Amino acid sequence: MKILVPVKRVIDYNVKVRVKSDGSGVDLANVKMSMNPFDEIAVEEAVRLKEKGIATEVVAVSIGVAKSEDALRTALAMGADRAILITAADDVHTDIEPLAVAKLLDKVVEVEEPGLVIAGKQAIDNDMNATGQMLAALLGWGQATSASALEIADGTARVTREVDGGLQVVEVKLPAIVTCDLRLNEPRYASLPNIMKAKKKPLEKMTPADYGVDVTPRLELVKTDEPAARAAGQIVGSVDELISKLKEAGVA
Amino acid sequence: MSVLLVAEISGANIALDATAKAVAAATALGPITVLAAGEGVDPAPLAALDGVAKVLHVEGADYGHQMPEALTDLLLSLAPGFTHIVAPATTSAKAAFPRLAALLDVMVISDVVAVESADTFARPIYAGNAIQTVKSNDPVKVLTIRTAGFDAAGSTGSAPVETLDPVAASDLASWIEDRVVTSDRPELTSAEVVVSGGRGVGSEESFALIEGLADTMDAAVGASRAAVDSGYAPNDKQVGQTGKVVAPDLYIACGISGAIQHLAGMKDSKIIVAINKDEEAPIFQVADFGLVADLFDAVPEMTEKLK
Image (tube, chains in turn blue, green):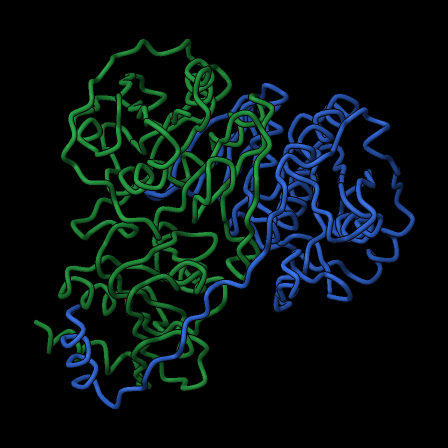
């Protein structure tokens, strides 16, 4: 079984986000970028399934600026076999919407015919939590989002999902889409020899036009603001003082 | 304009607070038709919500289990004629709504925190470090509402209830089981007081201190991602960007350093209290009242004095 793993290059999760003063977005010029952390978990899960002999090949795909190749090289260094880069933007500030990404992935799936797509549950930049579900819809496949455990057997994926009330276990018929939550696994670090090896793994370069997909955004950005700041309050000296403050405020 | 609003229902249980807040958020968008899809649901509380013009009641086990494939098929059959399809941003809506949006060939707008107009909405991005306002040019707007910042709609109405047949079942996915811990404590996202523990709590056993204070204050229990990842608390207690977003009257953070990820889930609380022995912890920068103390001393003392 082949597994397709979409990965996104995003601002590194340790970088402090700065909103541009003209309200046009978040400043991504000269900031450290990395693979979306949820996507790292997806790559790890796919590679583990290959190591267990359940998957035969792991193909990583990324859609964005040409530099998204970095995220693909990371996926290859972690153990993916080959990669597809779809260059859909020239400027790092251009975010390709989940609907357009799903349409491109739909076409990639048509060519690659994977038995399973494992994706991150959301990207930490736009926080949409949508691409996996949208791809499942376009393909007419079942979906299991926010996975914290995954078992493959007899043409189905048994997935434990993190839901509001706790955990839910579902079975989806393969082929299917699974999106990863944080606790599915702990992604490995790519070793230096593997990073070197990854440079030689095959990487195919494509464009949205090759797939006949229009990536024009449906949402027009009006503005991007800093969130309202919360001022620091006061330090109290004791539990008694804290309780009396809370009673004054009418909440205890 | 007219709104189809999906009530949050698990089995027979309506999450009335979250649904009522979503109704309040959507009231400006037009008359609201609420979909009550579940198993053994009494739709009366939904029909009473102010702003609701009609309730559509559909029974089906897959709806009760919140299966996104089944819910999407049902919504597709109901969608024609509505300009907005809305739900509270729960895990079930987050699973189904992008699926629905793709089939309608529109972009989903997740986690809306402000409705500016019929086509313009604000939502947090970058874990709440920025607020993006977007205008949708799609014919139908598919939105999930982050309910924490909205007041719940009142319950003085009496909308008519219409019963519909379920649509044909999907065989793409099947429900196996829910592992849900039932608790007498208030529900995390609608509680007036939340007491949360972080890495500083140190163990699953010590988490009883947090629960003790919560019970004394009739509060819900929350946890930071660090506490959940360390196994001190279950995943459904996680407060933060990838967990639950809460805005109670009082939020007490015990042994929580205040990572941006956590702040994104609780910074709209009316009063924030931080108890932490590290006076440099970032949580103190957003706290209304900070107590620099060892939580193993302060939390039991507070519990005792509030009894």
